[in-house]
Image 1 (spheres, rainbow, N blue to C red):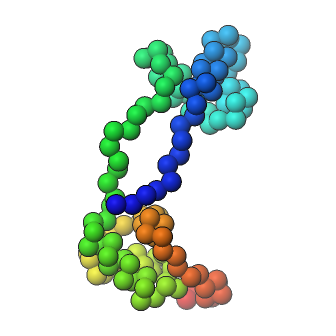
Image 2 (tube, rainbow, N blue to C red):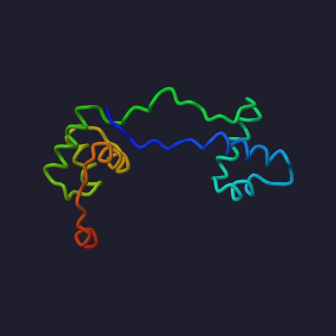
Image 3 (cartoon, helix red, strand yellow):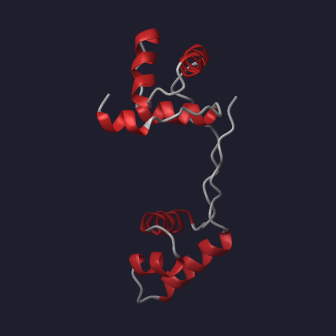
Length: 131
């Protein structure tokens, strides 16, 4: 239904280089992360997977996480944006909750707008005044 940009997994070559360097010894996971410019959590997860499975390959995602809003609720969100495209994410969130009874975070509203390729105009001066 929606196409989100998908982050690519690190290459098998890079993964193997990290594992090889770690196995050489005398280097911490933090230093590995700095050396290869990756997150420490990635190094931790990679090394754990390697110890448990012997593989450096990324996990294959078999199922996409479903969206928080159903088709009707997304339609209501589209209508809300069309009716007032200068509404803030919080305002859209509140109006969606009033119309559908479903309460989601402002982040979820933002993600839905990105998926729908919709944008809202931001009135910076209005937001500064606290209105």
